[in-house]
Image (cartoon, rainbow, N blue to C red; front, side):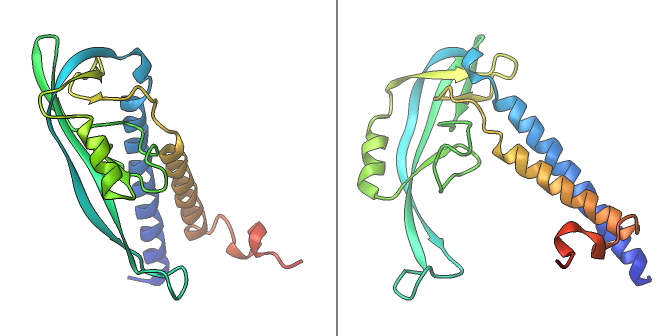
Length: 187
């Protein structure tokens, strides 16, 4: 297989992957958007606790900074009923960027820097406690404890990745000369 054909195949693979990521991002955004119009139900807390995770860094910020940090994740599981059908969920929030710099895309945990703070929050959701649950009327298995709408940030990153895929295909098929790109020109 010649080098030019390999470049074209890799560019096409990157482009197809970018399209798949974009479709997934759009689907998740549509599932998670407009939570303010979702139906509500009273649910029951099945589990609430704290999980400790160690996050390792590849590079230290300075000589004295640690290579790892502990983060404490508040976990919850609750049951609710929608249209006569029983469901369970682990979602706090469907907005993946609500956790600040430490966000978990599944929405199933809330990160805290200290174990004490995580325990304080977990104690608000004692087993057997009734809670307000918001669920998607079209897909009642999707629920959350917060009505914050989904963030556009993952969708914007997906669009950027698609742009990179388009650029890779154009370069591989020699529609654009890499030397003529604006950031490559010498002043």
